Image (cartoon, rainbow, N blue to C red):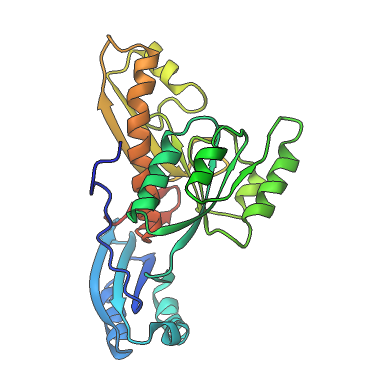
Length: 297
């Protein structure tokens, strides 16, 4: 069950607040150039977080929040002007408007605990996003989802119909959502589907990756006699359970815990970990570099 205030966002969603995320090779002068540029364009920096992998030849990452009066009108021109700074420092960058909600689709199978956590967070206003629809390969969640006023779509999947099912799923989500959340959706996503949402599909895996990839990780953990179990939220790539890790957590267990006990304990961890990852993604706190993430929290 959600602990009151545990995931409450401290983000200010003022209409004139924007975010700038940057990754580039590290060198002197990056922060000065960005700060001067924003100041010259009447923007006021209200928060800044940065990280360098290595000051000598490593990668540099920064997340900045700033206020700019009449942001909606001025942002396109600001982005255009910033291109010269970006070229000078070989930056990959992204501007976003803090008040603009991410649009989410949630994919789910038979287990409801991760889905429910996201729905509770959203209903309470702690998850600043719009849940546009829920897609499932089973009908079990239909009544639950529709009780929140969210559209539910049943798209059955079999090995023989997987391609047609994914085409139907793409019809449902394309142009409507920014991000897809796999809330214990027990299907492998094809490379063809992934190319439509690079680093925008978040999965919860019920183990502390890279241990116990694939199916039945709690049974694998029990057989191995682990003393800690965990869960991992990550972006989905073509490598099974091998995408950039966003968040993880663990809980201690003992020889007295059987597979069912591990599953029960694990469900709580999964809910918490996925909710954190989705919130951080919606708040533009994550930068992906190669197969790793830098998460500013």
